[in-house]
Length: 473
Ligand SMILES: Nc1ncnc2c1ncn2[C@@H]1O[C@H](COP(=O)(O)OP(=O)(O)OP(=O)(O)O)[C@@H](O)[C@H]1O
Image 1 (cartoon, rainbow, N blue to C red):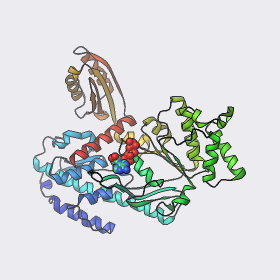
Image 2: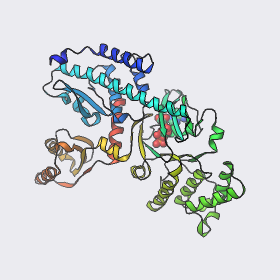
Image 3: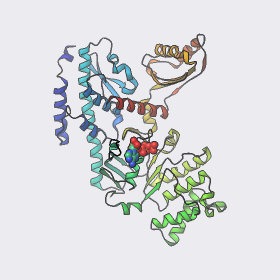
Image 4: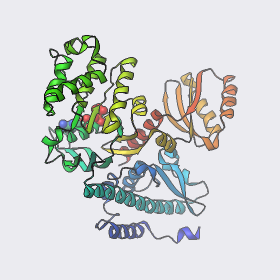
């Protein structure tokens, strides 16, 4: 405990961290006075979730802001037995940490305070380091003017000004991201997270408030006209003319991409074939007569005509039946080979099938990024236990879960159905079976099941963590 007591106070630590990191970054920020600056750096990282960090959410109000950062990063650090220890995911630790218990029963309040200080320090170091790494990556790519990264976002930000008594809205909080050729990047997140605002800036529908993006090395602020010739867009709501045929649509958009003569006809024919709208005279029927699936396939074909190197697809399979969706997916899978695609979706399945990397976009920032396996690994390491009983047995279920796995985390409870996450290191699946069998003699269990973490669980955790942050900060 002595070693803990000897740590300097938060203000000293934060100041020294600020100075060291400022020297490193060539900036002049005071971490203690302006946590929003740290947030600024934070939003520039594209792989934050790989990292540590920290923190006891309880304490003074200024720390609420730090807590929000810790949530974005995903790991909580505390002092346990005099050592800075990774306590796991901050979302997973949840309320037990917010009242201090997560730091260990034997720790007196001083130790909690020290843990907080250490955590802030550890957090700050990581935030700055990774922000620096993210910035450096983008800056290096910009210097190289490489085309192997067809999409580079350089601190892209969108703020909608205050209007009609509503406050200004930060829709995109300064995003730096680089996507290589051949990658389909999936963005998913709750409604209002900022996905459409991001895409609208990149396709030239709205101007960024600050920052910019480079598509095929061209700046969206100055070269949008040229960019349009190598960009494809599949919008959320299909923009087809009912009285034009599929072929006519493609001829029209092909011409917009500067295709002419036989090159145009070849591209249109190839495009119709690729989305299975060529045979049986379908290509020459009015789009108004197409089914929903055919309309989406035509929209995708339009977005791909003229061989664009950068393609944006906004929820491409929304509303499609499973068969149409599968055929749409195979088109997109083929298409991604030679280009970079950003795809927004609400479907975890779609994200998992199509996307090489996924980012969860919440409240204007990417809260985590990685492939589906990495995300599940990072937020996983748990069994997801679901059980349905009468509502008045919910408390008994909670007690059972608590007994099985003291650090279990409740994902949700909806009228008798409860879903929990149990860390694998503290529970064996056989014990779960046994506990449920025993419980059946005490109350009615309608259904139960246990599974590994899914992408949907990751999404709920990340989005819920972000909500908690918004309440705190
Ligand atoms: N023109 C606008 N003026 C003011 N606020 C806006 C405008 N467009 C979007 N917003 C706000 O910006 C935030 C981000 O919205 P956006 O549509 O980009 O999110 P999204 O993730 O695409 O949502 P969805 O999944 O529902 O399409 C929301 O809070 C939204 O209300």
